[in-house]
Structure formats: structure tokens, C-alpha cells
Length: 246
Image 1 (cartoon, rainbow, N blue to C red):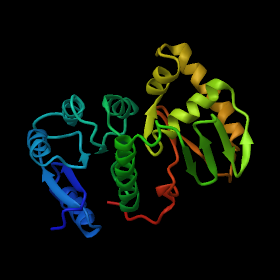
Image 2 (cartoon, one colour):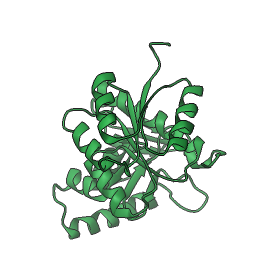
Image 3 (cartoon, helix red, strand yellow):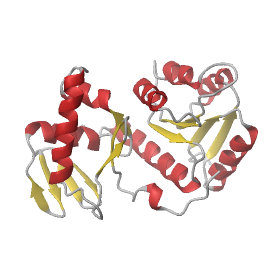
């Protein structure tokens, strides 16, 4: 087995789904580790130090949220929740606890693989400090120069207020990851009251208009309704790819 393969820990109690994900990962050159309970998942995490975790929430011994909470006490390993729970509060709780992404079942294979690539890439960025140390972010015609605090779309500068720029820069530094309303508000204003969430929504409406978000245009910031916002990554949005649902 190649030592340069990414190790992905799958924590899923449904045997058919677990087997499908394991096969999908191994055929795409990932090393897959399998756990069917939260306890087993934490044991494998401690012994194998995986590069990524794909986690179901409805586990037989403990809620998968406990695994996120435990891992986040010490590690920033990317965690993708793959769950049948579709309630917005479940998504928000998982993301606020530190999950990098949340995919609901049934899911598309193309989408899952794209989200895995994004999460692993984000982990490399966080280790090297690329986004935080200055430089630029570029994705599908959008360019952000952190040193100059300037934003460009298709080479044309977009005039943003200081707050609007701070929101765009924050989202770009977590590109590909859903950031909840509360997480964005804390980063920009330092509080989480209802008024701040409203301020975020007003600023975001202005930002999306300035970035040219309209039917048929490239949506640089995606709205995860009721949950938060996601800045696009450099890869085309995975939902546009042909997918096989399971």
C-alpha cells in the first residue's frame, strides 16, 4: 500500500453504505479505514491519525456529534458529515462544533469525492498558513489580494466597504467549507445577537450584487439556506458534475 495515499476514516453503521464509500475511496486511490460505532471511530482515529473523517451522525452507541466534539479538542483534521438528518439545526450544530462540511443522504458520488478533495486541500492550507499569511486567493474569475485588501472579478476591481471586504476575505480563507451565520458574525463583529445576523444578511446581499451574482452568472458565494454561506473553491461546483446517487 502506498505511503503517500490519504487515509480516510469512514464512521458509518449501515453496512451497504459503508462498503460503497470504502470502494469509492479505494478505487480513487485513497486508503480507507472503517468503523461502525463512535467508540470504534475514536479508537481508529487515535491509532491511525487519518487525514480526513467521513462521519454519520446516527451511530448505534453514541451520536456522531460526540466524535466531532472529542476530535476538535485536540485536532483540526477535516470532518465531513454524511447523514440522513436534514434538519437545519442538526447541520448548524455539526458545523458549529467543527465539522468542515455536511452532506445529506442520498448523496452523489461526484459530490462526495469533490468535497473530499476540497477538505483535504483546506487542511493543507491550514497547515502551511497560505491564506493567513497574505498573498492571493483565486477561483473562477474571482481574485482577492490580501496584502492590498482588494477584490477583482474578471480583472475588474470591485469596490467593497471595509466590512464587506472582511466578510469576503473570511469566507475565502475557508473556501469550499460551509461557514454558519454565527461563525461569520463572531469573526466579523465578535457577537452573535439577532441584530448582527441581520447585518450579515444585509452586507451579504450587497456583496453578492457587487460580485455580479445574478441568474446565469458565476455564484462566488453560495447560500446554504438557513445554515450559512460557502465561498466557491477553485474547482467547479461539484453539484454540476454527473453523479450517481446512493
